[in-house]
Length: 406
View (tube, helix red, strand yellow):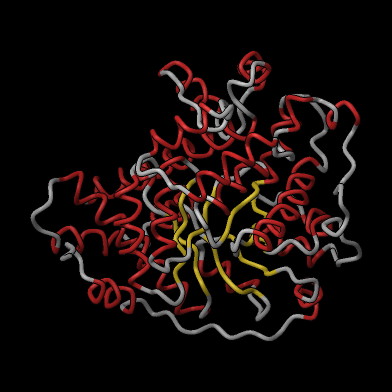
């Protein structure tokens, strides 16, 4: 297929920046984390900040729509945006904006590769979250620009699961993002065959704290621990090879509570805080069966257990879909609903969507308490949808800046 902007053109534009391979020494501080089996990814799109904390122990970088938008809003790419606008022909304005946004994402990813010679996880445009064909088409295209280094980040949706599975069949490494529970990540591993899945542990803790349910301590870590156990069981028994990412890390001490997790994505501030506070590995909760101990009122509450437990009917649904992948998201959602999984792939009306968007990244519990009690939604599905809406808002800011400049 002929694209408006060729891979070679995108590569040439990336090479126009004065980026040099950044070399640094090995860090004894971070090597202690590596020895536990945990890979360390830097969670940033800011090249200068990444250089300030970089060491050989970091094995990848991860970006997202919000982080790329931050770089675009600085004006770094204004001249390039104008250049691309003049070069791209035959597209309407909406198509041109999406094409330019794709090019900037790829170019920034190539710059990170050139600077650090590591893998980079790059997220697709949020308009594709519910578009299977679009996920596959743009995912293949982005991967082909730097197949040895680019990991394609896709949000957890019904379409995302199917699109990711199709990319897996073509050898594309996928990072299925916006996961908040063991069950969501079991879908990611068995149905999507994703290379990486995620628990956004900081947002889970924030949900409980912000809504005055508890202090939020250890709940995200509990979900990480149980998800890691689940991933290892799945990988052993179902011919998968999905690695867990502990994401949305909010404090340096959290690093100690999850030693042995496959991967951390660590914001640069937390990296610096860990060094300043001498946060060194001393124990492993991942190796214990139960993980962190939660307060009785939390651990016994049925409306919360879906975060760290997978019910038998959910397991059967996941295994069936893994063996017989539907062609459409509607088929996948209908099968899940018919088999009791009513709160995993939810349909929100316009008023509910507005409520969730207005809430921001952390939904307001009281607004959803009835639906949670009736198993119509889950905390994981609310956080997933809220996270996607937040990414969409940042994507719109990025697209709007492109539109303004062209």
